[in-house]
Image (cartoon, rainbow over all chains, first blue to last red; front, side, top):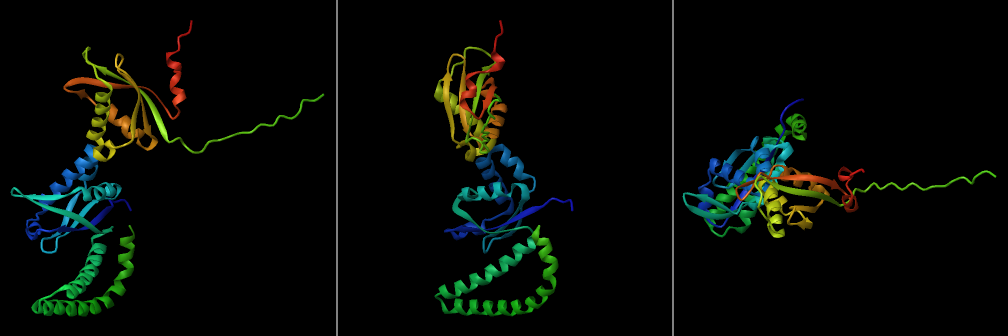
Length: 169
Length: 124
């Protein structure tokens, strides 16, 4: 009834350089987001967003980042993300940009979206891949994910009532 | 003969005006500091940028009149940015290391209202 509501921004880090994703660190990223908000929205924006700002999930291989912020100020954070143009690590600058995939009220909704998104990305990769060995590996992952989808589909139907109530906030 | 019934028409404007006009005066702690119009506008924009960032430093702000001797000016800002401009003027403390303060004399959505100020009226 009385609690702090958050918004979770699911973003993807897109970059030409493959070393950029591997040098992702949650503290470095948190500092970078705070600096950018301070530059774009001033001291007011920096103070308003920094209370609830946290990096909740980070995947260095796919470049997926989950940021948490308070519901009242999530638009300030969201609008500051396109102004991030480079990632700096140990003196090396990698140009990159953040692509926001999904905004959710809970981590669970973002996870559901991420699972569906990854399935679609696997199919796209399957179409684009050139090497035979890669093709087999991707086909195996696709079939495995389809089997998992059938299993979890039956479970989800029973849970979905409770989850939807949580996700509505 | 009874007077004819008076008919009148009442016009109510619901739409708030797009711009707000502010009459402000800049005061320095020590005298002898002068600013020209460009430096004055630069000061306003840097105040906005400190508090609200680059996005709000780009608000359409105009300095309509500026007097260098008294350091007073009339500013025009779009109505959505009035609160931001006023709060950033309040929190501005110094210009090039010298302490200063903005005094807001009058604020109105109509420019004509700034021509007469009943507070400065002198009664004989």
